[in-house]
Length: 410
Image (cartoon, rainbow, N blue to C red; front, top):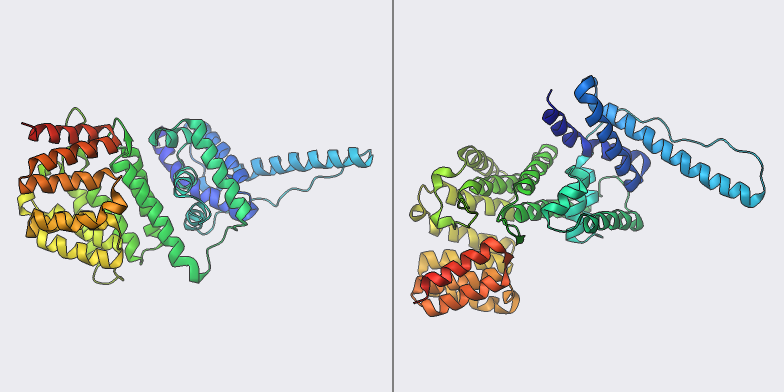
């Protein structure tokens, strides 16, 4: 087994090992530190010595010993302080936690639910999920989100402390809360994917490490919840969108919009998997927003050329989506479909009510500019593209929007 294979195995096992320790000992922060030490020990020993018979059991045993040593040291320190205060001259035996248990059921979903605890903000949920369940280092997460490592470390530490302060215990939520908590997990995975697919700031349009991690984690959730239609829908959506990645940028990193992409560069294997997933799920599962978004992505994927896109079908799906999940971004996307079916003026009319909610969002101005361009109003289009360019912090998007404005400027 190569070093890369071992690293992949450790990343897959990390959440299972952490979940086992948190379930056993209850201390999230201490357990996470112990697991990281065990992973480091494995990465050092396994390439030369070979894999143990039960890699997960080995990691749990090593991490548990480290956790036991820490507990003993802390208890001994407390007892020494108490003896000094009480004048007691002799040491007392320090009790240790029970030996680690053998790996049992996969608690990864419970760990995900804990990382997405409602007491945490969305950025904290994302950071903790990538650290505890994704197995990314703090430095890797900080790099992906373009913040200093110290800032990300503080965010993760505060998230662990908030979970502890909330009194959350390591067990599945009660049945009445399960659906809502699972939705929170899917939302966090969706946010991770979106940040990787179109980075909110910085010089790069895409961050493949985040999209890849989001897909991997969503696959894990699907294995744990194989009958959940929305989990399948989210995985299908990610696969169908990620399939376009190679065609989304030019050699210089510039953005290529969907209508101009070379579709021969789309990953057909990912498209086939995504379409198969959503085709299997739609007829049998309760309909939901992720399934509808995946169905829209599938219609785009099935068009060999941009002009072959079945826009009436996409419009119908967006109208269904708005019934399930009404929000300004859905309306914004629906306006594009309306323009493609009924003309740009109809799409512009649909955008008018969004000014109060999305006036500071670059996408509203970019879409409006695009529809003005379709309608032949180049002056309004140029103004919209320029406004959108000032509102986005993504350098590739800024460059693309400014190029659109320049193209229409006499």
